[in-house]
Image (cartoon, rainbow, N blue to C red; front, top):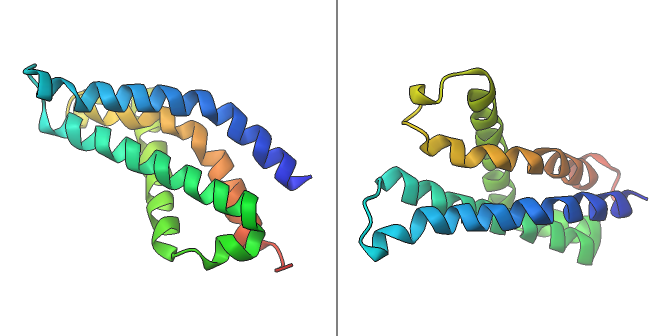
Length: 134
């Protein structure tokens, strides 16, 4: 049942992944075409691509190999995913409740859509780390 729920969450996140890739490429590519840019946009675009890669890697490792495989993966993947979930949550909170101008213009808001990955990430982490090992 739990894997089925994770699969449904992943399917819902697929559209957000597509948007994230388009936003990230929109932040990374223009400088190579001669457009004006901010270095923070490029850095955040790369960060979005890295976080998406990490999120999907953790998901596929769990779906393919189960809890044992997900626990055996290098802990750096989990640390990066945790930091990304935190950064996306903070970004979404700032966009929703604060002034974007207080955090480096609008660049930081690139991470806000990543908040849709936080619940599936917490679900995956609970499945891997809080359930008894099978």
